Image 1 (spheres, rainbow, N blue to C red):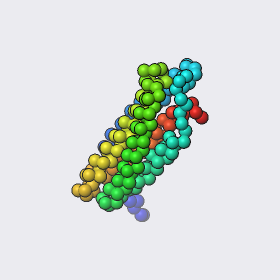
Image 2 (cartoon, rainbow, N blue to C red; image 1 turned 45 degrees about the vertical axis):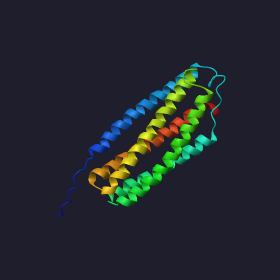
Image 3 (tube, rainbow, N blue to C red; image 1 turned 90 degrees about the horizontal axis):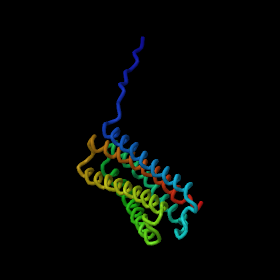
Image 4 (cartoon, one colour; image 1 turned 30 degrees about the vertical axis):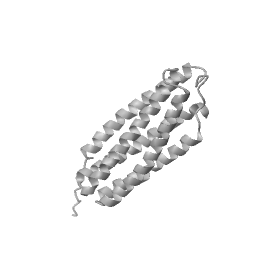
Length: 192
């Protein structure tokens, strides 16, 4: 009679579960914002209102591509952190941080430019547009700050705690990118 090896079930770390709950609440927030956007859109004609220019398509799509591409180095950082390769994980995070920072700076420039054309106080479109896009920018900033903190922490090497931190941050970043796709589609929908 042969014995079957026992493989105990290993649960996800608490940091991962904490991030999963945080992402679920953020998905709820953005689901509410997107639902509000479309509720307002279908109740208000024309959309966007007169005097508000139609959203430009090319630049936001290019920026979205840049942002989504940062999931690759972030995921590599997660893999390398679990393999205890601190310097490789740091380098991958630095590549992602550079791209994400460029994205955020350009997006803030576009956001401020839009504020010169219309404001949140002008109409329902301005209110939901600036709230939704601003909330997305805030989440990108949170991701950048988490990654910058991890780059600094990895100078001390990879511990289990730091590897879980990189893994949880990668999870967060992938969720931010999914939300970025949704927000960009909603933002550009009047032009499509």
